[in-house]
Image 1 (cartoon, rainbow, N blue to C red):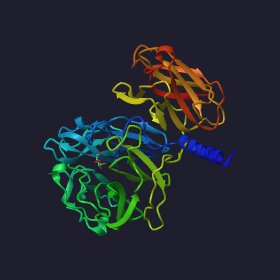
Image 2: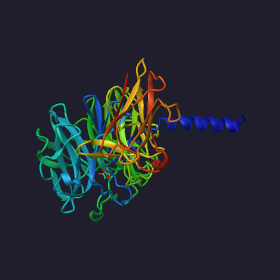
Image 3: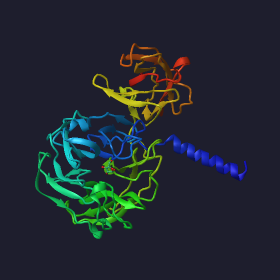
Image 4: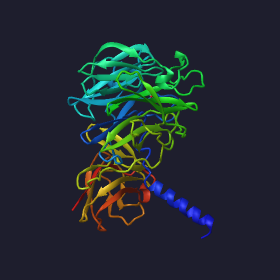
Length: 470
Ligand code: FUB
């Protein structure tokens, strides 16, 4: 091998390995902007919006939630709330965050009101995945302007909850214990250089959100605050500005209400293919993670944004290092048990399939097509091989083939299910196949969709859940 071919061999090896573990964006079956992570009982929930590709503004209509216990396999819980859930909301289902208090979940959202302003509302549920209901039947924060977007909420150790939000300026109120009302005035934070790295120029209200005023500015608070406390320090991460697009910056304080001290940019100067960036930070299983969004999912862009995650380590003084955007994302922090029922919509990476939901089945995988697959990472088969694979499937037409592979779509199939016509797209049948080649230990599993003869180009079958048996 000459030098050039050795180089190209090494490059393809590196790229091959990178693609093998491509994990960003974390959801490929729909767009997932404005991620707001929440840790509850050993599971991370990610609350997002739902961008509509092809639009020319942020005209979203619903919010979604996914969860993971291992940071790489995300279970889609569908759309628990939409604009229809809030009688006062007209359009623009924008950034939101959910928090638990005393066993109830409060999902703070923002949307455009019937009088064309933006307002913050709150939906409540007994479960992190819903069903949620508008708790008030009216907005919680509605002061008749465009700045009432992007609520972020945190409950301090003394039980006092704070709601921050704002486009152009940030605001906060102290929430009451009911999480549905507040006491005291709405406070607007001073937009000083010391607090936010730059001063925002006056904005023109007629053009609405994301009007950044006259450049150039070093940095400044734009929108998308994320408020939290860690080791007695308070953090306010937000979308600042860098080279004509948003970048994530942050400020710190010793008190929940400031004064805030600008700390610099967290994520910047890498092209995200999106004007906005919006994120959240959590600690989970002794690791720290930044959730953010990019327009990098195929077909994406400023109005087709998707959640991505990077792991990072705080500096010893509690400051946050610069974090680079990657395609590989994060590593699993747990294994997945294939002997429990696994929802088909539990996905590390998916191609050529979509997610749908209805009242009877809940959330399920649909639109499966030849060449498509679902990858599930870090599946632990244990010391003895399973001997049976089962899948709950519905096919309104001639079905197709569902193959199960370990580690690669090209490996010898572990199991093959020939999917017949089941009598309708919601006529579910539990189909099973024996395990052909013994598999033990931990592997990535690929559930591969294939058509045969006339089914090759069509939607093949719907897929609700799967499991292995010994
Ligand atoms: O997703 C709509 C808006 O774009 C959000 O509310 C902002 O934070 C920005 O991401």
